[in-house]
Image (tube, rainbow, N blue to C red; front, top):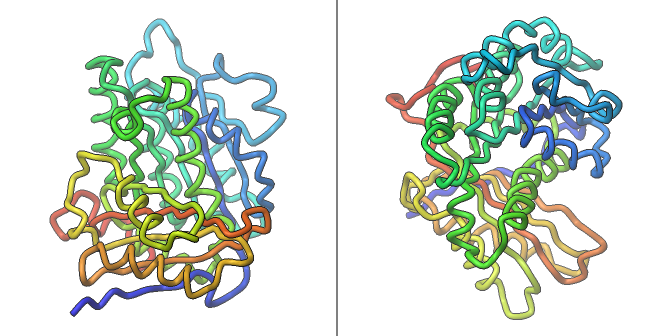
Length: 331
């Protein structure tokens, strides 16, 4: 018999955790800039990029970490990684800033280039050294961008899975396979929204007492993201099927091997609580029979009878997996 363990956001202390979000490189900074529109008071943003790529608005809007790189000689992720470590004291002050330090860190980066690929693993290691639950949100390049970007992506992922608690992977090529008729520009915008949604939903739901559960359910070498929703007049099945069908093709494990999940449901005020619980139950039933699921709901007065569902799923780390047991502060 299935023994899914369902954990609920917000059952303990009402205090929100201190959250830091760092955009690495051009793509990461662009995504994190959009986060400013959400006005989440317990969240602080930072931009990390080559000094020559940072604009005045970056310095005006958020904490900014310029990297000193010579574009004539510094062309590999290793150079950006070294430049990030040279800013260790600067980054340390950011994590230690505020009355409560940092409980939860999101690192947002596009992979394949030099800066985001090189800086993200170093940032993850620094964040975890400050006892912060550390989640990397990575956007993977299109295959047509060439073997060099593919090589840089592999270089980063090999290091990032060792240093972050969790690595959420958004693959541009797989997004295009799901929605082949959208333009390149539309695909980039969808990618940005996919990267932002885990940050906004978790930031609105999580309390400090949720951190241990949050770290536990996301302690996977690779996390996959799915979305669904709509009007529930036709029943729950269509919404659940949309979520389960949206996980990007070509993922590492079969769905029934996924034993960790974080599910959020955003709903209008007229949607019964029982419907929301049933949605979570239906998604949980598609996973490994001994899964751990952390879930929560957000009531949105602008949505009427609609729901929006986000699911992060993965296979929990095993003893032989990369990164298992390293820097494990939240046992």
